[in-house]
Length: 342
Image (cartoon, rainbow, N blue to C red; front, side, top):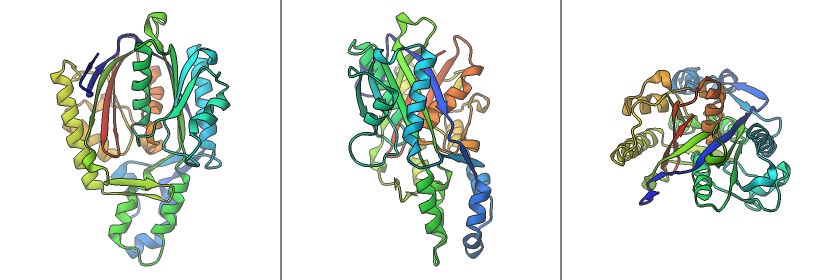
């Protein structure tokens, strides 16, 4: 049941499997400081900004940038095994990664082939910055409710190493200004990793975790505040935070007006960006910080994979009946909030 295109409710959808694939190589923020030492000295900036301002101590990278697709394949296979759903039962596979090697074909076709899904599985990419995974789950859940498919697999594999290297080259060039440095600071919070989820009909899986519904809301007048590609990410940090907080609060209030009560959830699982981002949302929505698990200190911002990775890591601490609110904001700006009953 939908109300306009903002709030939605699912009637018969469950989360059956959720997994993470950890990129193998840790890269610490201290290593970045060492490479940026001359620039920091020239601009009279202190070391440790990534740790103190963003709260990011480290992030992960693959052995090779192209391994993001292998990560998505591994995550998909692992999620299917965890859920007990056969690859032949998947009617939809959505890749939601920001990372891609080329414009066509889709990343999804390689992941589809690598997992060994059958010809019955519709497959395509959904690209919506860091909100892609949540959007993919919403689309899949709607198709399950509609009876068009029975099971869906959502994947995301991200590589940040190329952005990191391009950013470090620019930040160490002669003549860089303090303003230029700070505009690219957020690029160094990015990390690599992969995640996958399996959705299916709740009535056939009573032990599954019910996906109840939620809200989406757009503020696309802010689409130029954060723009990125393999060469770097350029961010108006203050403008992005202000616009994002306004958007989140508007969505939160609209959802409550439509009957959702999210003031006392057991967990608030957010897209992982930084201390500033999490603290701002916590304050704006008056949330209990003890109910907000974080992974960005050791993983950084893994794009659309960051929220499902965080929920996957938190899963062992959840018990039946717990209420989880997944909260994401993606550059553009778009936001989505989805409630899951564990």
